[in-house]
Image 1 (cartoon, rainbow, N blue to C red):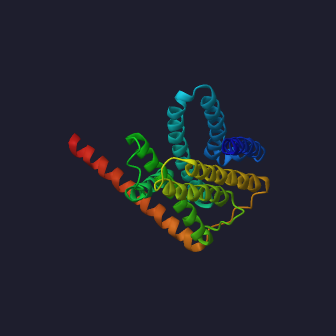
Image 2 (image 1 turned 30 degrees about the vertical axis):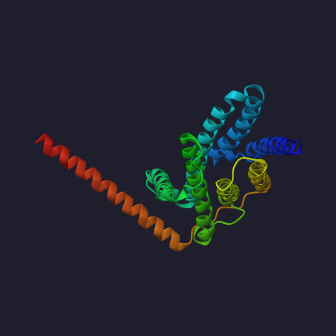
Image 3 (image 1 turned 45 degrees about the horizontal axis):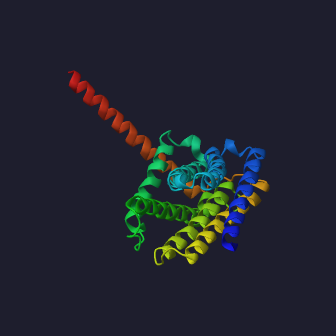
Length: 264
């Protein structure tokens, strides 16, 4: 009874904090800079409310809706990473080609594809195939979010961002929650279902609640003024932009030449 009560407490606390974050995002007008992150938080609240109602009223449908919710949640978190990367480039976006946003998304997908073969945790053979695939996707997404956070921290000086910048604050919350989730999934793979399994799930719920509380604190404070990139980073980005433009022009010229040759 105590365990069930703790589950409900964490669940309701998470929904309350999600509602508080939504209020702060509206107050700070964060939808202008981070629309996808705002959608992610709203989706989290709607999903939690829906899962709670379905679990109580239609328990037979809970597994299906839970699976669908996890897939949508992972997709939204991927979009949040793309949005954060694009927001970090704000000081130089005017100098970047229009295709830069697509390049960022492709790069993140490429990193995820590189992580995929190494992210499968053994010990899941007893699960149905769809569950094994879902767990594999979750593990890959968790590692991707952790790598994104660590990259931001490592490059914070070059990118001229700090802990008062929204991009790093959002990435920190995602990184912390992902790190705990990945650790729990590893522990899950070495044990069966039982009371300890439920306790580990509660740790994941508590870690997500901590991330939500951190975002409440972050968005309750005034955002730091965005600084310009270091000269080294500006030079690097301009070189990448120049290479992208040259490549695009070469491809365009090649396509036009082929069309003319065919017409001739």
